[in-house]
Amino acid sequence: MTIVATVLAFLVLRFDERVMADHEVTSWWLFEGGAEGARGVLSTIAGTMITVVTTAFSITIVALQLASTQFSPRILKSFTGDRGNQLVLGMFIATFAYTVLVLRSIRSELADQQTFVPATAVTLAIVLAFAAIGSLIYFFHHASRAIQAPVVINRAVADTFSLIDARLGQEEEWVGGGVTDVLARDDVIEIAANQSGYVTSINTGKLLKVSEKHGVVLTISTQEGGHLLSNTTVATVPAESIRSLPEDQTQAFVTDVQGAFEVEIERTLEFDILLGFRQLSDIAIKALSPGINDPTTATTAIDRMGEGLLRVREFRTETRFQPAPSGKGGLRQTTIGFDQILDQCLPQIRHFGAGDVIVITHLLGLMRELVHGAAAEATDLVVAHVKLIVSSANDELVLEADRERVREAAAWAFAADEAR
Image (cartoon, rainbow, N blue to C red; front, side, top):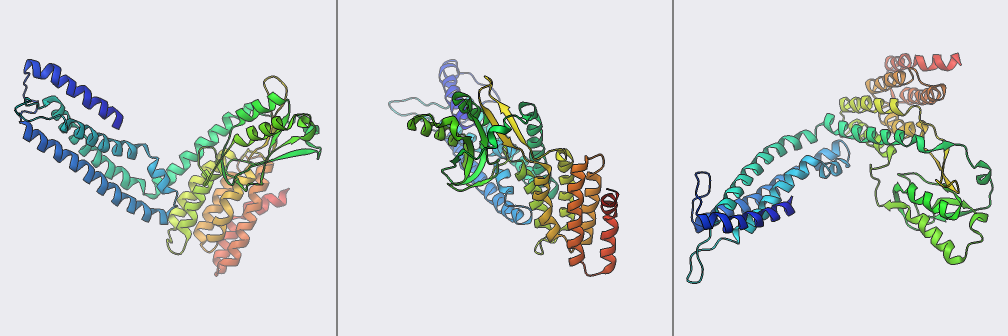
């Protein structure tokens, strides 16, 4: 937006020089003041833009920091990535840049130069100033909503759902089984990460090209969101497949494989499906902490988490194979299953919410809805977590009436377990 404003400033100034000045065009909507008046207007606009944007965003950041203690520190990241906030900030900075560039072109009458007041450019600066004021009104409304619990939770849900849809869209690229006999041997070469941090993405396309080039089957040993040490194995390859390669080619092969793993200092939501569920769990855990004590927000986060769990209950932890286009080589990778996602969501909520009968019964009701129409494997996983939830609640709840209420809410799980 600042680049566009810069280009626009030069174009409008050229228009004022070539068209407006030569033909002495006047109109009621054009700026009619002199050079000093134009300087005063533009100086006021420029100063106001910087002052307002600095004050508004500083106050908002403080509000978001306070909100992050209630929900999750990751709320600040979502704020900077919000398109509406970016547009407002861009509007103010672009208006400032445009105004400064127009301001420098104004000339007063001197012995060696004529007066030049770019009426069209000054008028456009006034229009941009009013547009910036309108965006400021929108910003305060938008920013105040951004720290409300339903909006924060909905943003986390939307991010999680997009990751689930992306996972479902990739299912057809992979097939089960494949080269099990090759991978069953112990004679493999382990390729270390050579750097530490969190895996934010795995370039499977690059790995597939590397495996095709050398005619080998690569086994990916980590997943998005996993933490690596510099000596952590990220991939393995049968030793005999590259044993005949010269040392320089072997090193190039290892470097190519390592370069397919993007490692950062923190997890990101671009490909990390577990982080999406982790965010919802974090919001519920924060709400259940003694300092916040907001069980309503916790139950809201649990409700929205349930829809995500419903979408992934058929996910299985299994090793899949993607053959190279030429048929020589391919990739094997273990997928994230429903069991891992449940382990990401439930244990801490179970721990911190065990003393609140409302939260626990609400969670058990969600689990009951989750198993309707589910496969036996998914049902077994849910029932196992239900038993842990009931056990934690029995240890924390003081009143027998509350413990009985929890047992009644979980009776369906024990009945299903006995039926098998």
